[in-house]
Image 1: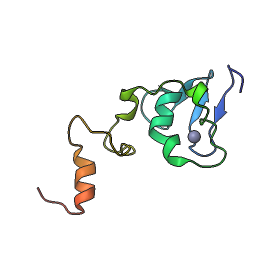
Image 2: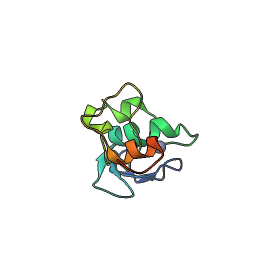
Image 3: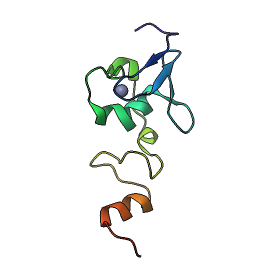
Image 4: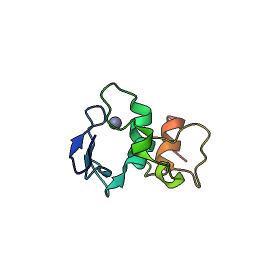
Amino acid sequence: MSKNKIGICPACGVKIVAGDKVLFSFGPPGTRSRLWARVCQFAKKPGCINQDKEAIGEINKLDYYGDPDELPLPEGKELPEPLPAVVSGMMGSKGK
Ligand SMILES: [Zn+2]
């Protein structure tokens, strides 16, 4: 894939512009590594245009951390603090 090309990952539905700038459906723009960390590594669908490790580059630890309503972290990664939405979701009940 050449640079300066706009691409939309058919698997994740995320737009990639200028080669490595990722426009998420919500929130601020990110990078390919962030997209991969949060979406593509979980999607693993055919047609995903963000599976090239060399294009993605090094995954920053911060790329994994996101808002509670985003995808959960991969196993083995610890959150700096509990995410209420995730916790309540796992508990399967409301109440404190
Ligand atoms: Zn993808």
